[in-house]
Length: 252
Image 1 (cartoon, rainbow, N blue to C red):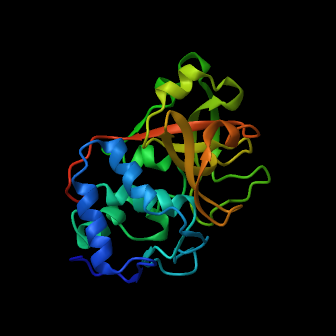
Image 2: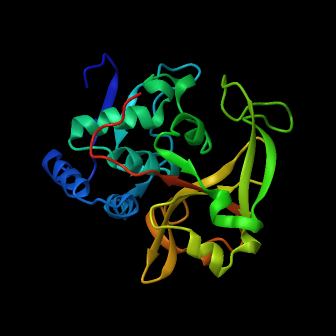
């Protein structure tokens, strides 16, 4: 990678040649949303596994690529980084810039919250919740990482005040779903203080039916679920949209 970084690599179901072939096929897809859909589709069936990243307030951060199991956030991390790859090497470079602010591989530079992407990756990610939700959009001011009792969700990460736009689940109507695009990143809005979302995934339209592609802790793997059905008991959702991509690795 051209960097002196402690790393851990596990390609899971893929050999290196198979992974490079998948990258090459994705690079030929010009539509950003379709590229996201193609890449994320390759992960269907990959096991759900949390806590694959190495690093915390007591443990030095290591750069991890572990495709044998993903949680909801590492899943979209890998998909977003692969959008900018034309080789395994450039995928690693892109992943560093997707996962870490300024490409600095440390725990305190890791993007711990979904809306961190808006701040850290604005060149590559657009916040489009208002565009999608229109007059249905609501907002909430939160201090991310701060629990009601004053404790932190993520140790040693400074809380930050942020306004969160979201679309209430009860306001999902055809006009809203028509404004979502295949490849949009979806965050499930968190009612509780200190969090922006409780889960993330990807919006995919299959035969005109909206689906939510995500690493499901309930099903234990990456799956597709009908979006409206999934949202029935959820408070709402946020929408981030990948900007037009070029087949080159991201830069800090």
